[in-house]
Length: 429
Ligand code: S3P
Image 1 (tube, rainbow, N blue to C red):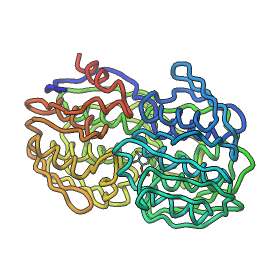
Image 2: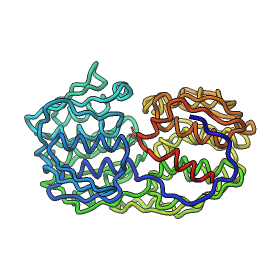
Image 3: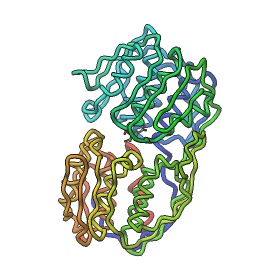
Image 4: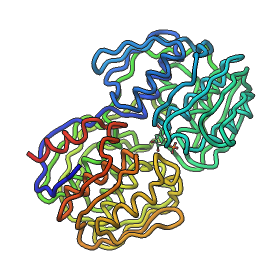
């Protein structure tokens, strides 16, 4: 699909609902004892996979437009499905669901997904779940298909090697049914939607710095969840507004939880114009998911350095930092982001090769990339490599380029943002 150069994007729109929070709302809904009403559930391929998965496990799911009601089975009563659970392309489902399944004593589950899912490591969740007493068998020790045999779990204390919200959340979900208090430590702060939602669901959960402790529970009770706009999807619109000369956009109702707004802080540091009320870190665990409208305008950018501790707070937006770097004055460097190699595609290779093909002066490093702004991008062809975020980065690059960008495989945007192409088109007129 061709994205031609644009001048002056304008208008107001709402980013799609948050993918991470939608996954969690459906999973906690399935684990809860009373029905959970989810307002503005994301309707996209990844989050549809989660609804299918919880149905297969015995939850009843009613969908009326953007509202979803999940009637769960309770914490320890997931049903053993007939065949494998298909997680599609959803890495978050692949990593979070085994946490719940590990606690289903005497029952066995197989998780599988598409070709990209079969390349995403699951040994990182297998290790702590085994310590808790479950039997976990990934293919070749590392990948899906993955068999989970549930057991009575024991509480553990563990230190994760990577700052990963998916791995942390998996352990926290398992801990709800373990016999005591489980503590998870992470090397850097990652998104905390699971902790916030568990607090709202009545779990005994505490944060102390980089550690979270959760005590086993009899049940979860979560009346309703309102899903905010997705900061990661909104980031593509923000990048378009900042890069296309003459633009002025209003993006309504975006989640601004501080563990998700790293990209917005990076854009501001690059002198990009993004007005909005971002949450500040307080050190306290809250059950809220704050939202803000974002007012974005075109302006000149300066290069910046993204250091390792900032990486988990902007992990899915780092391809866009590379794109902004092509238009900024000076050098933009991302460090400590080796996790990008195991996302929906190898995103270091995808960003570097993709942007270089459009005229960027960019190099891969072992743990990130470095780009020197050289007056913007010429344009050309970019292969999405089956990765929704690379496809959307290519589209935004096209709008800001001199000659336009042909994105091969644009349809993969439906994984997280099905109306992306229409939304961009609406901003042009
Ligand atoms: C997610 C966590 C991140 C992120 C992914 C969604 C989540 O992955 O990249 O898109 O919902 O917990 P990691 O936890 O592996 O960093």
